[in-house]
Image 1 (cartoon, rainbow, N blue to C red):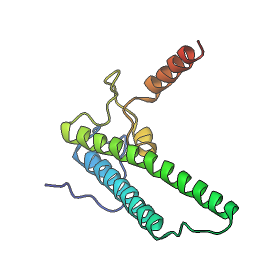
Image 2: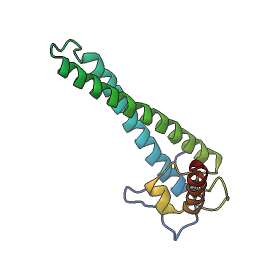
Image 3: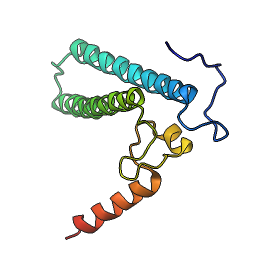
Length: 138
């Protein structure tokens, strides 16, 4: 059974971390984000199906092809994001949402608000990025 939330509810540091209200808040946030992405994706498919491909001018055809390619790359990134959203929803169900995968520490509410799919605390993310940069330069 879903937890009831007032429309004005925002998670607060003054309440227990990842209590039922916070879990429900982030679950709803993730579901709404996923629904928006799915809607945009279906609009892209519809747009590409309706688009005429027989532009007589080569420059117009090239421009249209470039636009299509960019739109498809964007949708591919969004498809991957939907996968991350689904993983975050699974973490909510499993009780591990909001905790860093590396350290087990709490991910701040501010970070989860900004990036609801976050799996690392800010500190762990920064360490990860520094390691990637160090090893990537070799």
